[in-house]
Amino acid sequence: MIGTRPEAIKLVPVAHSLARAGAAVHLYFTGQHPGLEPAAHGLDAFPCTPLQQPGLPDPHEHVDRVANGLARIWKFRGPDMVMVQGDTSSALGGARAAVASGIPLAHVEAGLRSFDSRQPWPEEDFRIEIDRVSDLLFAPTSTSASNLISERCQGQVHITGNTGIDAGVADRGLPGKAPRHWPAGRFNILVTCHRRENWGVGFAAVSAALVELTRRPRIRIDVVLHPNPRVSEAMFEQLGHNASIRLLPPLSHAAMLEAMLRSDLILSDSGGVQEEAPTLGVPLLVLRDKTERPEGVEQGAMRLVGTDSRRIIASVDEIAGDRKLRANMSQQRFPFGDGQAAPRIAAAALQWLDREYRDRSEPRRA
Ligand SMILES: CC(=O)N[C@H]1[C@@H](OP(=O)(O)OP(=O)(O)OC[C@H]2O[C@@H](n3ccc(=O)[nH]c3=O)[C@H](O)[C@@H]2O)O[C@H](CO)[C@@H](O)[C@@H]1O
Image 1: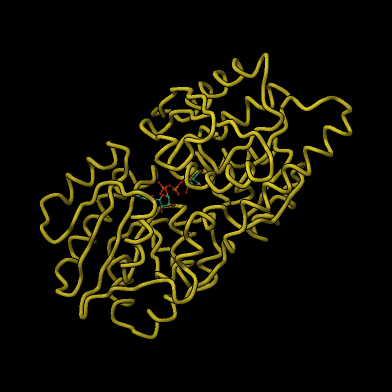
Image 2: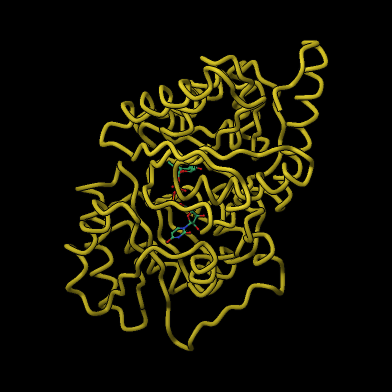
């Protein structure tokens, strides 16, 4: 099940590992991010059913549409297992349809918790519901596995690492493989900001901080726009007039990783970027008050700064001005996995299916 760009990025390695292990992989593209193409992510070798359900202002309504659409398709013939990733409305819709159709469900990136239903909203609750009904739970870290165990989730838990790290990140992050091109004297900041909790007041405060930071002569700022037009229009409105800030269109994943590697510091509210930055060894200020990915903060690779302008400016000034702190935050760390999550997931899923269908003494569907 794939609905959004990050789900595509994180499921590419899983689809290929499953296929290598002998599974027949069928993709369902919900259409949550319209324009998301299997070929753009190297997924064109797999059969794909498009649902054509673009994301809606009310994510709960989108969940229902995806769930109903899939349940209709799977009424007569469904797969042996449904695999969903993360916490999107597509993932929850897929999970509900699998349960309604009696199909085993696997959840990739299970167990992440911010312990606050309001942030990320509605993803925290979506992920909890998916975890409760999954038969197989692929937790990226021991922290996420502990969350599942303390909530007494019924599914089988495996600690695998995050598949996002398999997706070209681990290779680039390996010592000696990360080319850093810092022009002397410059301090390059890369920014992404798209979370729903930050729409409105949050965006305005982040933009005000960026404008203030351009007054420092050393600082250069690149803002990568989100594919959601509502988000990119707000950024244009607030930053388009500032000649010292470059607004870049959404980048391919490879180009995004290169842009991260060329940066001295990243400011972002993205979930995936929180996993990638420590692996690439680039310091990160997280534009959120809470995170469901505390591992990078605990290891000193990133800091939570929220969207308060003064706090953002103070943190940037501190990191830009303190070589020792910057060197420490720039150390490569691998809190989210070693780049081998997908083969672990494929092996565990196929083993689980073999056992399940042997015990059920009924043939697998494919
Ligand atoms: C609240 C939250 O965090 N939600 C999630 C959200 O995405 P998340 O917040 O990670 O979504 P983003 O849109 O920021 O996507 C991040 C990914 O896209 C890449 N990128 C970013 C910008 C760009 O121009 N080009 C590009 O390729 C990044 O390198 C990263 O790999 O969906 C994911 C998939 O279910 C989940 O794992 C996350 O938990």
